[in-house]
Image (cartoon, rainbow, N blue to C red; front, side):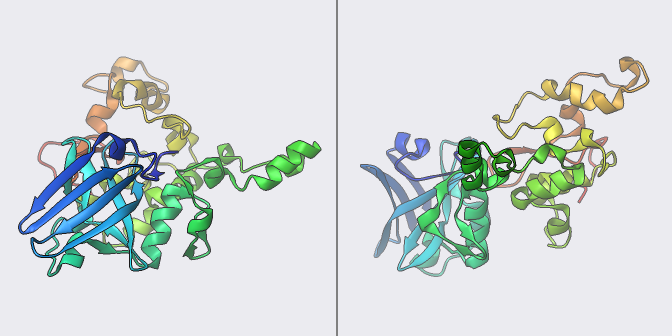
Length: 300
């Protein structure tokens, strides 16, 4: 998460791809490296827009989108980098858009709420109230984004004041509190349930999906986000490594052989299927834990 937002000078994807191109009808897109900058340009054959990329958003395991400034307005690029194809394709939100001019073809203007969500989740110290403060922005999700400001912590350590040195202890949160805390960025149940975001596009909102699971218990620590994921480590992508987490609940009081009719290895491969959002070039693990039946509709 420390690389959830990067400046172009440090961005590995932009540094290792000197030129990226994409064509959509008459619109031709190019991201070209120039020193420590990457220049984003779009042309319709007659006119062109060319601007330096300001920020690379997303670690890049799945994809990475770019934010730039033009005439004082912040925009999200209409094309993004996708690891699976090692190249550019439409940004998800722009997949079905039909630009009517070059400015629209280049990107989507970001309103205040979008900027707060984007920089509030992908960087540290960027948001004050409802405003983005670029002068205090620290790229990526750093310690204090979750554990609180460091000033009192450092002062307490220097002075020997243990109370002053204390930071947010997130280990004490319940499953519900943890889901809501992580949901600040990954989206809470309430946010998605009331947003009208239906269908497979909501598979990437893990707290919402987890809360919909039949086995979810708001007071049971075995089902909270951090029971399976250590936010200080890279995500473990080996499904079999999560078996012990599943069996912490499902093997209690009975032999392992009777826990599941199919088997007791790689539980998540069956009960947390990987699903691809069209256009995402990535499979997301569905956190709505369930018995998956063939040809059943996607459970919202």
